[in-house]
Length: 191
Image (cartoon, rainbow, N blue to C red; front, side, top):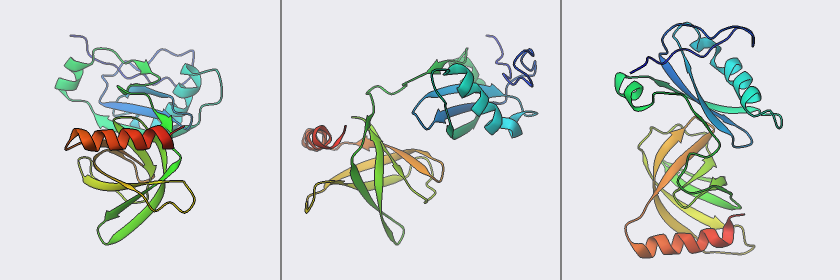
């Protein structure tokens, strides 16, 4: 097994940092592009500027503005699981579509309404100022953007990503009827 190394470079022409990687960073751009890089303890404080540089370098077809970074400490198990750092445009099993509906959820004593950002057959991303722990169970109500509509679809979810601005959840289905009802809703409300 090879040890993952830090990918930080002070200047584009420099060689990468030779130190062992301590963190895995998942970078996401506003346009939906995603990739991963590794950083050592010495360079992790430069994650945002380095991440912006990496996105611009890996996706040169247009300006890539960094939206979020998910920072994870690498463990020996993670090192065994992922031998090389790869860059992917879409890591999900089902492709994402732009969402055109609202989401409502109750968290603590607050009922929040927000706009869905994107959706797939396995999950949804939406804006939220609330901080959620990964694994939090949330019941969402998906509300169609149809004038005067009173219908909504309740769906059980589990938080998979939360950075204080965007929350990504995975759908949990208790029956095939729940899945079919959601798929029908998404067929009409996703672009």
